[in-house]
Amino acid sequence: MSAAINRASDFCARFGLRVPILLAPMAGASAPSLSVAVAKAGGLGACGVLLMQPAEITAWANEVRSGSNGAFQLNIWIPDPPPLRDPAHEARVRAFLGQWGPPVPPEAGDATPPRFSEQLEAMLAAGPPIVSSVMGLYPPDFVARLKQRRIAWFANISTVAEARAAEEAGADVIVAQGAEAGGHRGCFDAAAAERQMVGLFSLLPAVADAVKLPVVATGGIADARGVAAALALGASAAQIGTGFLRCPEAKIAPAWADALARTAPEETMVSRAFSGRAGRSIATDYVRAATGPDAPTPAPYPVQRGLSAAMRGAGTRAGDVHRMQVWAGQSAALARAEPAGDLVRAFWEGARALLA
Ligand SMILES: Cc1cc2nc3c(=O)[nH]c(=O)nc-3n(C[C@H](O)[C@H](O)[C@H](O)COP(=O)(O)O)c2cc1C
Image (cartoon, rainbow, N blue to C red):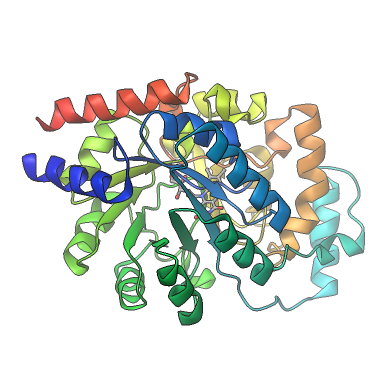
């Protein structure tokens, strides 16, 4: 197993880390305090900037840098073309959502995300050591600008074909996301997200064999056993999302954090019920109903996100997980309510002992 440890050591040396543990970028759940704690313990912090305006991206980077050594990645979704709107269908979705939360006005579906081009500029200006992509690849001109600034590009993929395409496009590291992962699936082709559900045990060795780049494993890793298994299967580092969400520094809603602890692997599911794009959450009453035979198909991304906002907001205010957006990976129940730095150390010391 020294080959696995050596691979991890090389990765750490290249990216200035003491341990090969990465916090997963989690849009809406990227508290600066969590990244500070992970980076201080020798791992890599992360921010999912999807929903953030440029000034918020700048402020996040400044805060994490001032509290740590500045080891973090900034992550963004590659946008899809604008969705096709269908007012009659949206009316059915609004009526359905109105049974779960406040009435949904027609204009709720018009909510527009921050401008991608402005977010990219803010990411570059923040000067992070690493920028990552998900749901697709950066255009060549942006890749060139990353390389000019010596910013490494970590490309999230969920299939072997996507890994090859990312290598070809100039990525520095491949982040292989298994179907166990919490949150949105990072498939380049949104339509294929449910069909191409590859678990990490199959994806990781296949990707490690297919590309020459270092591979980071993510999806369902939430303890030392998972970290050791990922390294044994060919990864250079492990990236953990749900496993950090119960840490006090994550600052997520208490009802969500508590629910993670009670969620068995089979009690999560992938649906489009929150945003219109496939993502794994706890199989709440709302998600089960929204995917049932009588429910209207969710509107496309990001329309569904706007339509479901009122219900999600009301659910969060009431502490009702059944109406909240409770993203969760299949290993949610392994997440521990302990300081993130302690978890980072335990993940790596435990994995090293298993691999020795
Ligand atoms: C709340 C939440 C938000 C997420 N947001 C993003 C995101 O903005 N960008 C991204 O690349 N991945 C996102 N992900 C996926 C994670 O980066 C990672 O793939 C996943 O957490 C790994 O699975 P795990 O949760 O079982 O550790 C998100 C995951 C969660 C749980």
